[in-house]
Image (tube, rainbow, N blue to C red):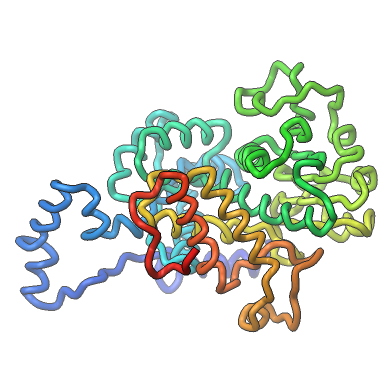
Length: 415
């Protein structure tokens, strides 16, 4: 980052007052009567109502529109273990995105926990405050156990965005890329480089959408995850293949799809050239992808390419997912985020990219034309239709999969 940009970023966070978020009241408190309603004695009435019926909290408090974004700071935005406090700017930023795109309020919570179990207990103990929990920037493999245990203990959605948010956007773009290339998910060979949170969640979701487990090769920094390796944890072992392939070069020979959630510049033009006809490359390492789009396109003119960067077409950006998934989940008082809800989000995003692009979005991006095709397989973050498209799909899936405790909202479009 250039020196001027670094200073601009620091000034943005420091001025005119520190931080990016604030808490503001939603009810008047100007008179003695207002005060008597806001606090004692009037506040006793909703207290009694909630004590008698916990679901009343959704009516009388902000629980139904409040998400906790929680971290232990062990995997801070690609910077590694920076500690809980240093992760606070990231979580404040996440709060801004929740509010900007889905009008969801957030408390950012940085937990300096001495152990994984202490972190889990902390989150579980404060969970009654919230309508949902967004886990953020937690290193693998602990992130898997943390989410699994909290999902079992709590009756509100627990969602690790680094896993499932990333997976949803990848899969939405992949379905559209496959359509354009004339291929089906059930028939393609997929190479996925990066066996952390995003990679493993993406495999799970691809399989739920119809990919064949034995058509997927997973790699970590030591090579192919195969059944003969003694050094892989239980989460990686679920996707180990009986294969003689050992390196990325081996794996990519004849592959239809490459998905990278790993490190910069690890894919060469020669590797891309070895892929099957009409390949798909999602190089998602940030800020520098596994292979730069211009290099990949030079190697293969029949390629569809996506990256994690906003300065190239087809950006895989989590903001397309988490605000809207939570919006739909909160609006039906969901007890969890089911696999069906994630699949619904994938299909809603994929479908939206096929629709004519509104003029206001073109203006937002300084474009004169944009339509579904090789350079537009995923909706863009400033698309105003996202809030009207993804939450209803997620809410309907929550109801259909049995995790909703409220009816389909009357203000949503009819399904």
